[in-house]
Image (cartoon, rainbow, N blue to C red; front, side):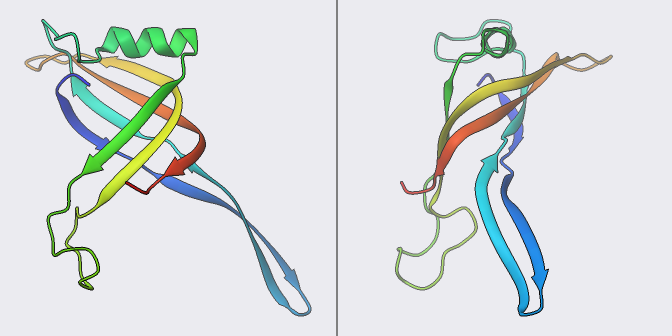
Length: 126
């Protein structure tokens, strides 16, 4: 992406519950992931940067893309019993751009936000 300002990756599990005379039964469904991000529009993007226009075209065309967040470990070695925040983060999946919004404000740079709706499983194993 072009100059990402911030992003979030909500992951939700569909849950159904049924109360019975024997207690509560809980059913877990598929996991949904819908990453969103805000980015600054670059005046002269490089060939490897995705722009607002790229995200908008992908949304309109219904193109399938791959999503990847990978943060190298910053804490103790795996298996040591403790990891710091940000250690070993890996999220990978496929999906579609489903919302794209261009944002302009006085005395600010041109920005955009986009939402990516995942399809299939979210891989969390590097």
